[in-house]
Image (tube, rainbow, N blue to C red; front, top):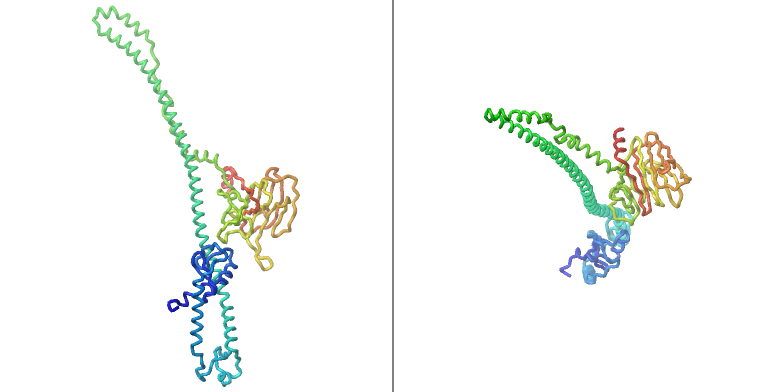
Length: 469
């Protein structure tokens, strides 16, 4: 035992000598009761030291450590029995009582002395127990605070890993989107280069045909001229005998019209290059769309899955997500990424056959009867019944004749109206009237695996909206 220190035999939880120690798969040991108490306050079986997950809820006993701890305690008790008793420095008597006023142990003679007149006393064992209880009470806030800090650190560790996963997934989606853009541009480039090559081929062929026709005319004229020039170089008598025939040949050769330059023979460079970027953008717009509301996955409840394009949400098994402050406090809900503080806004949601959903807007917290309360205006569908509800109005049952598949949410912030319409019939479902303040965020709730989807709109609508502002 001389090679074993007391520090080596202290339980990391209670910091006392091990009592019935058990060992985890990570090789850390704890008192059995300490470990079970620790696990009762936490959702998973983790090692209090290294946070690694334990495979067993009832870990095996560490027999070697148990024997060492018991031997150490026995040796310490034997040493304590041979120690000299604590004696009063004034009277050399045993310190058997504790002065509550002076907060110090004293002997029976001190108790009767003038310095302790009218003081309160306790037996040493009772005073020690009271002091231990007081110290335990003082330690409780520190232990609670330690627990909070450990939970905060655990959440930060989880956040680091989650951020890494988010970055990798977002990078993958970015690359996929840019690959689609690259493919579009490559196809557009090939089509435009092919059109240029086709024009080059057509115009080159036209010029070749023109050159061939000119070459034939040149050859015919050249033959006539050469024959006449030959006659001109002959002797006088020969020339006179043949000049009339030569004159007839020249006169009979039809005089061709002057050759004209070919119109449109050059490449129409302006057609290929004029406003190239704008033309490509206009063509791209025909295949592109935009979402008037983009869902924010950082606000989604752990039981919801937001689609990679951030346009739909559905219920699923609960995920292990960081407890970030942006996450909505309402269960099974998600918010839009952009809030509204003024103006008019609308978005369309396809609810389909989803049998449990809510749509609306979520406002900032306000003081109601001394406590903060969230502002929420929404319509909900559950158990085959439509209901309208807000934090400022009582619940109202809505009577609808048709089955609703698509809903348009219209917010007139400045006019103080929030309306819901059946998109297929363009009929009003319900309208809230309220003087809105602060920032309002689109709000969706569902407990159904069928997705609720924000419907895309043509880019032309986005351009007209941007143009208004």
